[in-house]
Every structure is written in structure tokens, then in C-alpha cells.
Length: 377
Image (cartoon, rainbow, N blue to C red; front, top):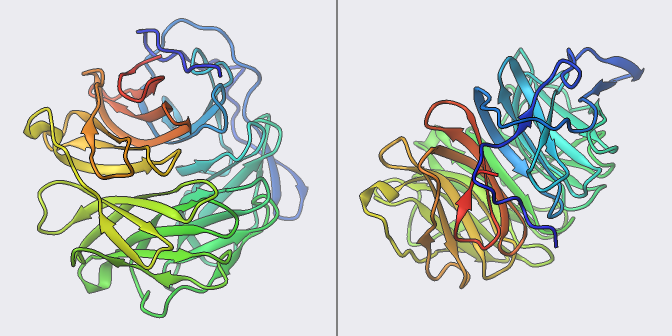
């Protein structure tokens, strides 16, 4: 195992004119574009880059990809191959509003988001980020909020369909082309914000039904999207929003995080087979500032999960962890400079990377090698 770097210095995100391209694309086939994302990492001293990283995916202990807005780059992709010691940053051409990324291997990634208009956009790489290709989406696809690729060939994404209900898209060719999935008839309007797949067959999506006052939404499939079943959240939590999901690899166990109306702390739910989602237990600590909102969750095993977000004081990031399948959650130790965390990825049970924004408005990357103590690489 190659541990993520734990040295207490600022993340070294190298940005140079050689690494950042304009994003212009050359056509290789109808509907397909290739956009260079920069060469290999260039060593650099610690650099604070204005902006925010919104999603991260770590396919191995040494390799992670993150997307967000960095400096003058409205759609940046950052890649490390040395466990976070240095990062190469490039522009994702054709993507103006990055929202998510999923990397089933160190060479294969799919990044999603929106265009300068109202449309959605999906880019994929199969060469470790050396080039990115634009995917073909169904007509009237809106902003794509999240993506999960349980294998190099199979991916699921959640999106707004313009003038139609929110939808789930599925790809069986590594993200090059996508087809819509049929959701339960109750899904009329609203948004799906999160998707996680433990295999090409098992996935969970979450969001909110806005037309009915913001009702919580969780849907589950165990047959690769042929049928999606509505889940029931307990105990009787209906209004609010599900912001993150995580299905444990090669199992039917999934976790979801979000906020239920009328509850003080953020919520975590757990399910097996997706029919009923039970509320996971909590152990508070660190005072009222610890309570807030959870943005994302990642569960490398059925017993160990990490949930990230922001404290109720609006200026401090939080990470909660569980080592017993959600029966008990505890806060972890974070640098005081971290302001908000939006995404977390754990390639091993105690080895994780989380991304977001610092208190001063710069991008932040935090890592842990023991699941409890987090620091800036």
C-alpha cells in the first residue's frame, strides 16, 4: 500500500502554462472531441489556488482525480499519481460547470457537469487524463449532477432532463454514449443529486421532489437499471433532500446522507436491497459547531464509512466516521483551515481523500491514513 501523503504543508497543485490548455477540441468523430488536459505533474512548492474542488475519485492508493474551479479555470481537473504530493491541473474543454467524477481505474475516468447554456456535458478519458472525449447524450439532457462507474464499461449518471422529469442515464461503453432509464412514475419534477453503484447491477440514487415541497427521494436498482424501486426512509422522514449516496463494492448495502426537515442534525440512512432505509446512529462530539449539513459519503466496507460536509457555524468542515456499519458515528480531527468538504473517496478502509474549500476561499485537499486524523498533504 502506498499511503496518501500526510505531511503538514499546503496541497501542491501545480498550474503552469504548459499544463493548462485552452480547452479547444479537435473533432475525431461526430459528437466526439478530444481535449488535452496537460502533461505529467511538475514539481512545485505549496500553492494556494483560489476556487473549489467539488468532487474526487481515487481508483487506487496513489492515484486520485478531482474536478472543480481553480484559479481562472472554470472547469479544472486535478490529478495526482504520487498519493497527493503533487497535482497536475488542466482545463476540461466542453465542460463549464463541473459537478462530479468517477474513476473505475487509474486510466479510466468520467467527468460530468454542465455547459455554458442549460445543457449537460460528459467527458471521458481512457489514458489517465492525457486526453478527454466528449460523450453523446440524449436530447434535452440538462445539468448532470453526479456519476458512478462501477467498472470501466458501465456507468450511471443523474441529470435534469429539460422539460421532463429528472432522470438516470446509463452507459455500457465506458461513458461514450448514454441511454435514459425508466424511474418510478411518482418522479414528476425535482432533482436527483447523487448516484452510487456497487456493481454494474446495484445502484442507488437520491435527491428531492421539489414539486411536493422537497420530499426526500431514494431509488434503488439491482438489475442494472431495468427496474428502479422507490425506497422508504424511516422513521417517517419525508421532507428534505438526499445529497450523497454510497453503495459498498460487491454488496447490496448502501448508505445515504442528507437533511430531513424538522431534524436538528444531518441524517444518515442505511439499506440492504433498497426497500427500506433505516436511520443510522449518531455519536456527537466537539460541541454544537460540529452539527451542520452532510454533502457526501463514501463506504469502502460495510462497516466503515466517512461522511463529509460543513458545520452549523458555516465556516468549518466536518468529517464523521463509523467503524460499525453506522451504529455509531464520531467526528474526526481536521485542520482548522478547512471550510467545507463536498466529496470524499476512500480506496482502502482507512485511506481517504476529501476535497472542498478552505475558509479563505482556496481549494482544499485533505487526506487520512488512519481514518481519524486528516491533514493537508
